[in-house]
Length: 271
Image (cartoon, rainbow, N blue to C red; front, side, top):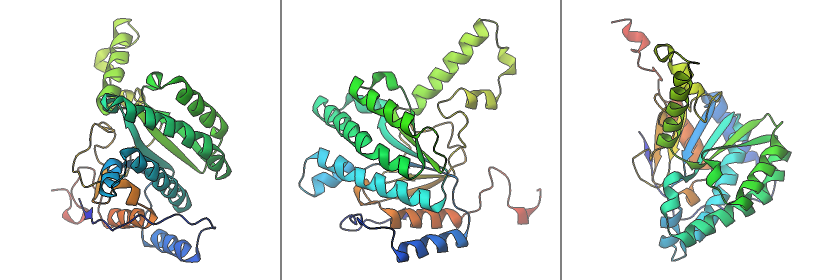
């Protein structure tokens, strides 16, 4: 699991069109090897970045929105089909009430501001998680943004909101158990495909690459079923510092690996 190193400051987004230099970097990356179909990100380090800057934690979350915008744009330009961002976990509800409120307000403002941008770029917005726990205003903005972009096909941006892997698996097991109890399902007939189809991510390919920023080395209850054979990339960069150049480095690392899904190397035959 390669680990990248932090730089001093995030690179501010350009207000102009994509630079020729960045377009060339993306073309070289595409020529170099396979671009992941699905990239998932654990966006860690907003609060620590803000503390290091002598600023309030919420300012780190605001700066993190800039990284979301840049990574989403770059991923779509590269041809990534699915980008899943761990936006707010079920455990995050236990944070101080003031921080939770600030995060929800930031989410509302971001959804309102970014929905049209996503639509112009043919990017569909989707949400995973226990959305019933979201405040009404937040749920309304989310519903409107998803409805606006529902027919877009270039890439799907999945926001994992009020989500955790254990919550998702518990809900899936409960649904299957209820179906068995009602006689609609033979427990002996349950397959991995049926379990996958009962998850929030039903119909979405498993992530090829999981990126975690912030220097921690754990998966934090994220996509527990789906990442069984996902390649992991750990970055020391705090999320507000993680911009497209760092994404390209993560993809280069991914391209250097041989994905075997539990099988032996081809050169080793069938021993």
